[in-house]
Image (tube, rainbow, N blue to C red):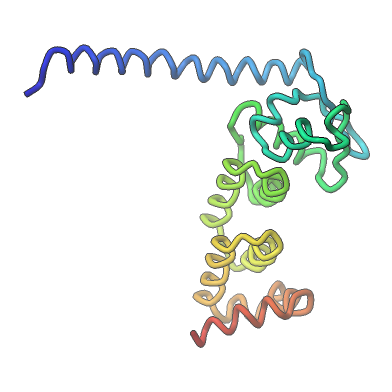
Length: 200
């Protein structure tokens, strides 16, 4: 039986959901404004060519790696600058925008592969999953070897399995390609491991 109290409860839940949705969008917009305007920033991410102002609390909320940096007895705890030498300026900016907005705009193959590396380094799982899903959905004969190498380097067994299965299903188109030949030279063990799956 459907009671009036159930109706009241349901209506209240719907109202709460309606209130929460714009609040979430508004909050993301406000956080992005703080990032864009460098408002009350307390940390700098520094590359060899550029600096990015940010907020420790936002970085810590998005990444357990940054959280450990700023809360444990690491050299960054009492410093206002973190040196990042292995990521490009473009990738760092895109990573920060995601941390402030939880959105990735205009995702491309190049952007997804670079952000995947950044997300894995800083354990930003939601961003890593977005990039991983994009690469899975856009596998082709020209990029499958790149994905296989990337997944192996970052110990991503799920993405690696998808890439290996795609390569085996595609067959000669990839095995006879320059990408595969280059991979056999750079990582012959991985190439052999993939081919051995044919006999399992």
